[in-house]
Length: 415
Figure 1 (tube, rainbow, N blue to C red):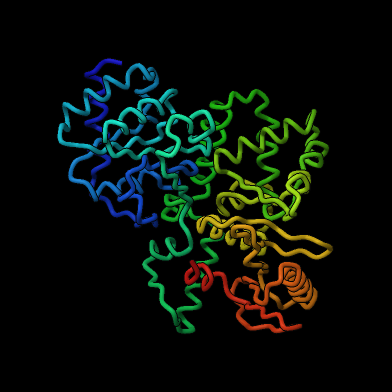
Figure 2: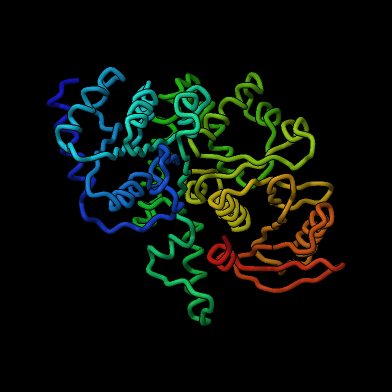
C-alpha cells in the first residue's frame, strides 16, 4: 500500500477513535494496564471491543491506533507492516503504545506484533474470533500475551446504561423496576447498540454480519444453506442438549463431521458455546450430549424460530453467560435427574446451580430441588443455589441448604 494512503487512514481513524463520546465503562481486569505482556482482547463482533480500547486509551498520553476492518486495507499484506510502522513513528514519535483493532484481518500479524513487543512497545490487539491465539499463532507469542474475552453487556452493565443505581437493599417499587429491566434485558440482550436502540432488525443484521463476514466468507463455507439452518436450529434450542448424530439425522447432513465442523466455526465466532456433561472420564465427556448456549438472548428472540419467549431457557442462558464472564469452568450434571450447572475449580466441584423461571408449579419445584440435591450429594456439597426470575427463599432438606435467589440479586452481588 502507498504510504500516503496509510497515513490518511490513520489520521481519519484516530479522530473518530478520540471523539469524546459517552461510553459505558466496561469491566476489565486491573492487570491489563500494568501487565508487560501483549494484551489480546477477543469477543463476538460488535460486543464493544473498540469501546474498551477507547476506555483503556484514556490511560495513555500518546498512542497509535488502527482498525484493520477499514475496507481501504483490502490490499494490505504483512509486507506493508513496515510502512505502517514508519507512518506511526512519523506521526507519534513519542508513543510507545499500539492499539491494533480486528488484527486477524491481516495474515502474518503475529510476527509483526512479536517484533514490536521485543522492541519494548506496549501492545493491545483485538479480534472477533476465538482462534486469534490458535496453536500456530500462539507459538509466535507464547508466554508473551494476556488474553481477555469480552461479552455483550452483563445485567449490571445494562443497569448502568439505564442509570439504575445498584445497592444492597431495594424498595418494592425499585424491585418492580428491576424486574422490568430484567425482562427487557432478556428480550433484547446485551449488545451495546441494541441496548440503546431496542431494534430487532438491527440485531438481526449483526447476526447476519457475523454469519457472512466472520464465517461464510472467512471459513470459505460452500454450503451456506446447511450452515444457516444449523445455526438457526441451535438458536431455537438454547439451553437444551444436542448430539452431533441427532443433528445430522434431523437436518439431513451427509455426516457428523460436517455438523461438528460447523458448530466449531460457530463457537470460534462466539455465536454459540457448548458445555459437556460432567464425567471423570474425558472420553465420556466427549461422546455424551452437550448443552448449547447463545452469546446473546436477543439473538434468540430476533432470529430463531421461537414464536414465543421461553423465559426459563432465556434465564438459563443468561446465567451461563454470567458464569462465563466470571471465567468459571462449567459442566452440567445428569444421572436420572439433572442439575443445570456444576462449577469445577482445580480438581473439585465447588458449586451446583439450578435455574428455573419460578417454583410455583409443584412438579417444577420438585424436579429442580431433587436434581440439585442429587448433584450436591454426588459432589459432597452442603449448599446449592436455585436462580429464578424473582423468587427468593431458603430451602433445607436432608441437611442440604438450597438458596433460592433472583437472577438480578445473584448477578449483581456475586463475583
